[in-house]
Image (cartoon, rainbow, N blue to C red; front, top):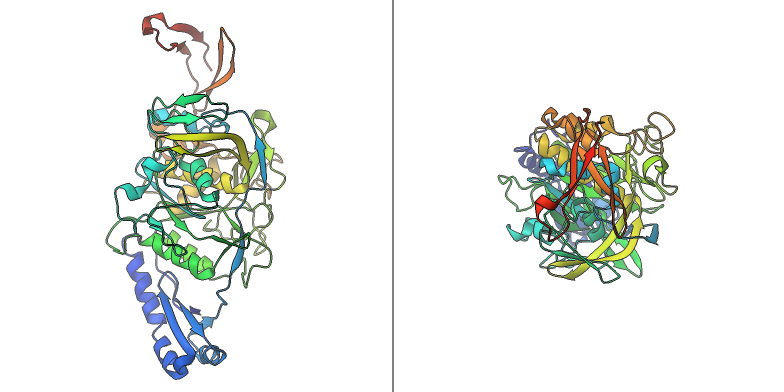
Length: 488
């Protein structure tokens, strides 16, 4: 049940939560009188402050009493809302790390410069996250904070993050996935890869960002679903995870790798109350991102000049063969005809699951979908905010759009938006101190007696050339193999 309320004031991260609480308390002042008038026909379950709303149980007479209350803006049926979580395609592929998606967007070119997302937090609103997955376990914020501050679970109330569906875990892996030094990645053929450092075996753009999560979806009868009240509660939790507005513990980014199936109960892709919660989060300085969807646009379909409902599409292929995935959601926005999605990122990611406490297992398969494209953009936003912490959500998002690589057809369009995510360009735009040469090394071929490596300069200045060397395991550095590389 949504109440009329005045607009939220200008962004003020330290004061937005108390102002939202005051706004909601003011808007809900008439609820007690309505409840008294309805008697036992109306019972209040919870009052929300992220938007001026209340969750109630009412008989037809109670609903009639609400309809007579002039302060009530709208009454929603808090029924199950079917959502789409599963990726739309899966395939078997050759294992490769760093993951191909990271090389496509150039994320690996900035890690050696210390741009790893350290000091930032990404929140995942999804089916949960497996906190024992070795690619994620060491950077769950709950290892150093209270459970309440790092995990929200209205469905089960689990004492640690968990993910019985599996979708949220792979989303997190493709945003912040990285093995700690010394941990092991096991491949399906039995071979092992031990991480030499925290940026050696990586599947997400922000390998040192922390994460928190909200389980906002459950499965019933083989169908994934949520409720409007759960989504509102999740946004409310994210703005004040530990329940103390004076603590700076809100995440920098909220990743939403999900979409609503056609015919979702009462959902208006342009005006739903969910957007009020999104706007409140962005006003508090939290950047919110949505997948463009594999079949339809909501809820990232809203046409908003401030990019508060920014949507991400998926690409496939590499190099000159990059194109928009044929099942990636397209625009324009059904609201005012604006461009949707606003940006695109690789949609194919490796599936990495738990093996042991210090070991992850590569299943030798990949998933494809906009769920994983948006999580890479969330990781990239964490990098931008690391090097430009003063940036608000809109400014950080515009940096990504302004530096994206155009994907044919030329110019902004309703297939890929402003183009393909370019992490080095975004980082250099966000903070000029990172301008210069950014070398990206990719293993292209290995034989019994040779290793072929491609060196690409992803920076904004020409490279003067230099040496590259290979030091085989167990060989002293003096015996390294040296190759002179040309400028470029």
